[in-house]
Length: 106
Image 1 (tube, rainbow, N blue to C red):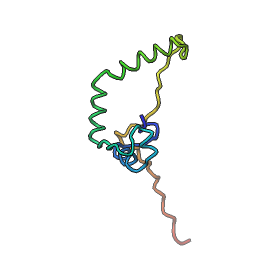
Image 2 (image 1 turned 180 degrees about the vertical axis):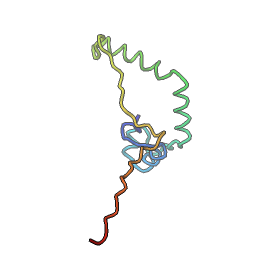
Image 3 (image 1 turned 45 degrees about the horizontal axis):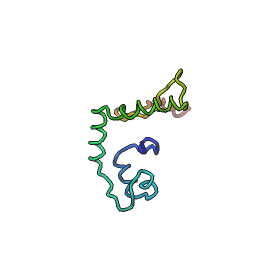
């Protein structure tokens, strides 16, 4: 979550920021004495979350509870569709038009 909110593009950058920024480390729930997980640990966590339905088991009761408490109206429920840029393809390069050389002389 913090990686998306802080617009950190890569897990490598996330680990570096956790190691260098004390406030960010505290915000993410790590104390000063805690060991920061490695990049491979984060990759394994994301893979396990994608393969399991654990997040939906947490999310659905939370939405139902919010509806019962009146925070969300049950006539219109929307799920956040925040745009996250994909990094699987390089952006298209713009081709510059070829300029004709100027005529020399008269």
